Image (cartoon, rainbow, N blue to C red; front, side):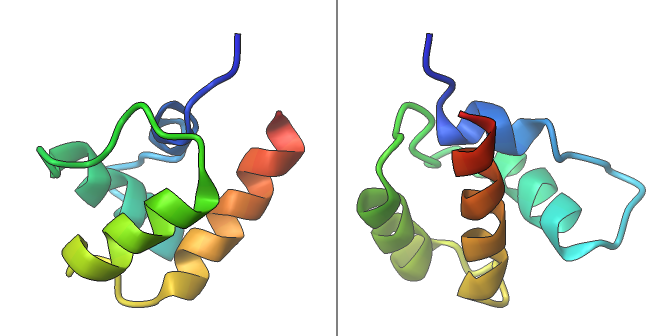
Length: 72
C-alpha cells in the first residue's frame, strides 16, 4: 500500500529537535487541516504555500518530498 506524504512526514517527527525537517513534521502534526491523504506534489505544495505559515521555506518541503519519492 502506498504511504501518504503525511505518513512519511510523521516518521521525521522529533519534538526535541530544531532541525528544519523535524520542525516541519512536528508542526504538520498539530495542523488540524493538513491534507493527510494526499500523495500529489502539486496539491500538497499549494496547501503549504497557502496555509502553512509554520513552514519558513518551501525548500524544506522539497527536500522531504525527494526523500518521500526515494522511499516509495
